[in-house]
Length: 495
Figure (cartoon, rainbow, N blue to C red):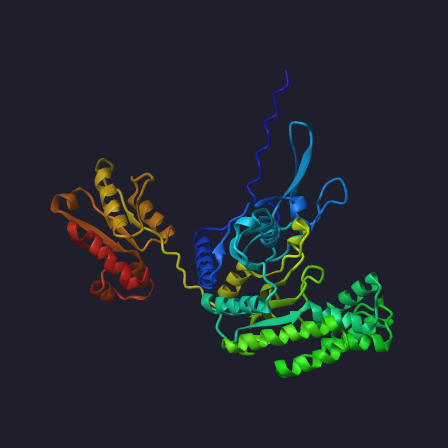
């Protein structure tokens, strides 16, 4: 009789594109989220926590065109008792759920509705170095007003948020543009065919890589790329391409010069002129609040979600340099972006509902602060009360209770207490600042031993024998002084 094969053990590994977060990383993120949402709250935005799962129909951006939706989202089909099934998906951002929430509850919400939200989002896309399929976002949006003041306010709030979390002026810039300006440039080219307009937009998006000369070639007959392959161009004439090149090179020494150049780029387009006017109004509103061009600036090179945004768009870029994996210097780049999207809620209501907002990539912002050594969180563990006598566990728990009631993080060692050295190794692994030692001898005399583990580690690294005598890392105190002495040690080590 054949033996039953044992089921193979599952591999203890995270799925590709995902990762686990421990201790200090979780604390750092929580602290950053508190700081960001604190600014949002200060600006008058209210919190919203929507479901992590939406119907694929509600998400909209990745509607299925085959048997199952598998483009960009993690989706599955759920069947009811009649065998009918809806496609559900993990949210890929926090904006699409907001559109559904507003459409569903609009009669009970104030207008405008100002909300902030934070949490993980999921993208079913190819992972890479530092690019994960699950990451955190922190958004703020204003729904129900077409006022450009709402867009300006979002930019001002984004600037304040970056400074609040530890990015000083000079290390970031918020750049703004307007989708209407780009539409005006397309009108100025005289290109009306939708497919050809899409080709022009894709070419504009290559400006950072190929420069003005490369874009000119790609808008025309084409060009040879770095590998020697020939890339066909869009086929515009020089006259048609000129407004695009004027637009891409319109960034001036200041906002006034940039605006003047943009007016030239859009020509007689009413849509383009409207976009330039909106940028000018935003600049005036921001200047009135004290946000200069060193913090927020008009920049035509900002091109975001061309089919998504309908008006002002903005992006926060960190301007300091870091070293890449090959040791080369490069700028850190974008950590937040957003803009006006007046058609998203309309999908549900059939009526235009203006909206504008911003999304901060929390994990990228944390990575930036780590690169600059600007994270203040520490991995200090709890005070550990060691166990010298199992029969006295109630006394040890009493010590821990006193420490906790005084606001001090503390725990009793709950492993095997036979080997005292293992207890101290445990405290070291927990990065504990203090260990409490109290055996039967200490109990009889009404004292406890306090071991300053932080000082002990410093002394062990650098101190001479004489310094050990002058600065003992372990000392005895009356039992009644346990809490005050531990507090004194923590304060001295800032733990």
